[in-house]
Length: 342
Image (cartoon, rainbow, N blue to C red; front, side):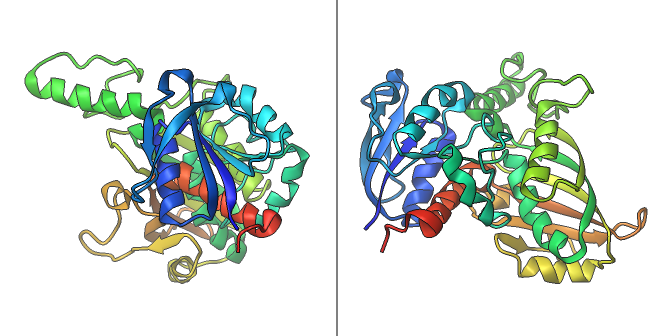
């Protein structure tokens, strides 16, 4: 026996990826509804490579009563309207927006890191999916934290334009094409030209000079991993279509060698260690696209601090950073609480 599942925001990058991953992982579904705004009603979307197609329904008119769970990829404004409605009707919401992440009554979950936190979902019947850059980082940090206890993390991100949605991907493509033919590369979605450039600015600026994206990485890591861990982040948009990369420096309370860290990461859930100290012996964003794993390379000791390590972390942000993590939460919810599937 399977579940009655809703995917809201099914026409967007993340919503489509949710459908692909539900199909790939053979999630037990008895009935599936795909929702979007009124402008997409009547369009169809593919359910992965199953050959099945579903017609888009209007989220505004959809009755969630009797549905088990809804995977939301509709942004904070729409989530604010519809998540409470779905949750009140008994349909558990797994939300990809930032709206509920820091709500103390809403668990913020990365299943490889803090699965037990999902037990608090009944307070609001809503579960939050973390920021894409946070999700992959904590997958890498968790097994190391368990072994040697992390004190401080310094991270610089290299985030692909797909993190800004279809408009971001379109802008990179159009600017690149325009530059090659000698046309102006006008910035619309981003604050500066993204083609052949990097932009140290994601989301809005805060009073302390950090951006909201950087703030998210700090507070979400504390909520998911350990409130005592100190985090500082610099988040940068780069001209890559899909795949976020991170250069992470970690300071530990206890001694840990690069070799020990490699051995730990090699066995860690959700992690794929590819770390050969030779040309090409590491993973880049192009190689992680379409993959489930968070890839770790370049593990080495940092001699500038006591008990320090540096590493390189790469993941498909549309998958582990969003859609895959949401589906993994759905699987966890089913195993621990709903238990309807055979």
